[in-house]
Length: 423
Ligand code: HEM
Image 1 (cartoon, rainbow, N blue to C red):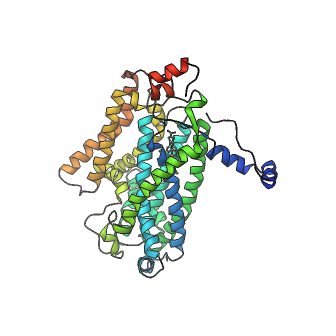
Image 2: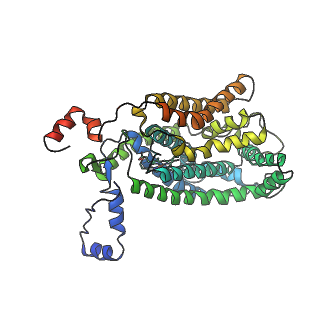
Image 3: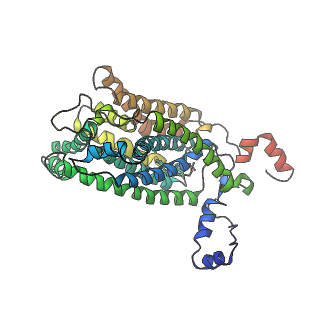
């Protein structure tokens, strides 16, 4: 449904002049105004718009924060405090940026879950999905480096723990892991040098993300949007122009989401963070429990579930990289879980496992947390590597409607079709 007849007509002479030389307005109009959107998409299809909004917010507030932040071990912590206390509206900028990171990830998790439920990664949307996974990895790298910048205790020790993971390579090639870690640090320990390079990359990566988002949306507009039935659009009547229909829905969802966001920004700005990060980094005092931000907890739990350091690191990275192969691991020909009764149960078990891993990641690695961490880690991999391929083959899907209209209107669609049109 990608190519469609453009309804764009330049209304002024200047517009016509420009259109003949650089048809940028025509392109934007084609992609974001009269682009055909399935009539039946639900509110989960507003998450892409939310993500675009939060990427913009993070870049805008980040650039403003960078005007006051000092990336040196001696001044970083105090400069962040000064932003909060002395800079005009600095408290707002910092709260929006800090809480914004959490809401960006929240929206991304719902967006990924939507894709997994409705099979949006299946043909012809594989590249779109892979670009999504690339964005997700870039988001993680950006958030990790951003967290180091306030140079609090958790910033410092999170960087120490995570960069040190590369030293596990020493068990395969002695010395190589240590060399990599020291190269990342720019010295023999995490220091101001590490902070400066993390700052440079934290500033750079969001623009790389923006570029990959451009490709992501391009790929989406080549394949066209999926919808809750997973059935392709069969007639023009099954689509509506993106503006105003989908855009109005996006604006409404965004308003509700932003209300929740504002609640955290104004009333609970530190709720999602960690109190230890309000103590300046001290290389001589390790906090009793080093935990990452909530959105990294499931992967942290996977890392700690495996008793061997190198294998733990491999498991953690592959838990995300495996997502790239989901379009091929899922063997079902039916896209939407709406018509896949068996897959649907496993999908929710997968969601529960990820949430449980998140909870376990926040707890100290002792007693039954270790056992449950291993159980849910095992399920995570079992789901992707075994259940997805097998269920696709053995499951008998529910009968698929012939079209989106039939799925939505049922008998009425058949009647109106025989009466001369689907609407
Ligand atoms: C900065 C992050 C991201 C932005 C700004 C973004 C943006 C968008 C937008 C605007 C759409 C169309 C509207 C919608 O379907 O909700 C979309 C669709 C999609 N995105 Fe993303 N996305 C991001 C991250 C991701 C990630 C992490 C994944 C998966 C790993 C992903 C996978 C998809 C898929 C499969 C679709 C097609 C959905 C369908 O038509 O059913 N995206 N994205």
